[in-house]
Figure 1 (cartoon, one colour):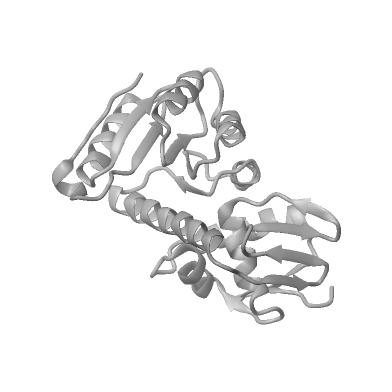
Figure 2 (figure 1 turned 180 degrees about the vertical axis):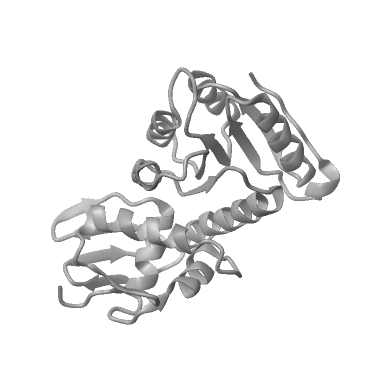
Length: 241
């Protein structure tokens, strides 16, 4: 299924962001389609995995809101295929507060996730923050950026690529930003709130679990010893693990 919603007044003179919303619940599709349309997004929807891939190929969205539990192909497989075809920011939507499920999503290319139920206000704030990170990443690629080498890692800021020893490690845009933030101050403990503000662009501490999940995903890809937890405070990139 596919629908489209426009709101020219809300979008103003700027090009509207194209958002693909994928969920098998009609009420959620209507809620998100109307809410995002009111916020100035151009929205199309799909209610199953195969339809999501077909709409994405035609619509070429700037952002995908993707439910995990879908008929045909689940959200994880849809995310994997989307990222293989044309990388796009993906915010996973899940009804299960399951850390393993969330880590799988982050590991296959999702940039963020939200657990249902959520408010439209919170969702739009998360979307705006995600899009700002994408814009920041694009700007970084257009300007010189240093290559950081620390503790066996080589972090190329210009190309946004990471090597551990001699092996390249594929990170999502958010994972890269988090690693680069920690690598800019190796050995320094940064609080979850500071990381949320700098990496995610959030002004409050409501998403500290998001930081924890992304750190765990980085540990799986880079090694558990590279990132040190200071309980009750935050995280640091080790300088001599």
